[in-house]
Image 1 (cartoon, helix red, strand yellow):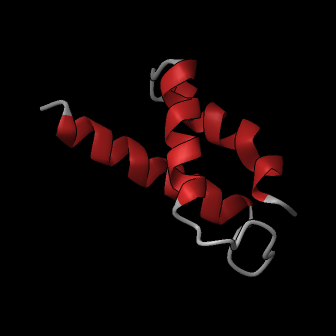
Image 2 (cartoon, helix red, strand yellow):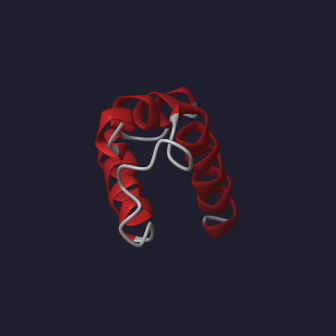
Length: 66
């Protein structure tokens, strides 16, 4: 499945963490830009990998905010 198929899951993880939709969308776009074309690779991009990437992004944001 293409990673955009998991965008709602990403947003759901951010929402549970109390992070606004616009920030979730910006972070998703940033994550996708770093995939180097691996946008439709079911072995590396699946629901679990997207959830884990979202959780890592939230962790990074929490440290960046201080």
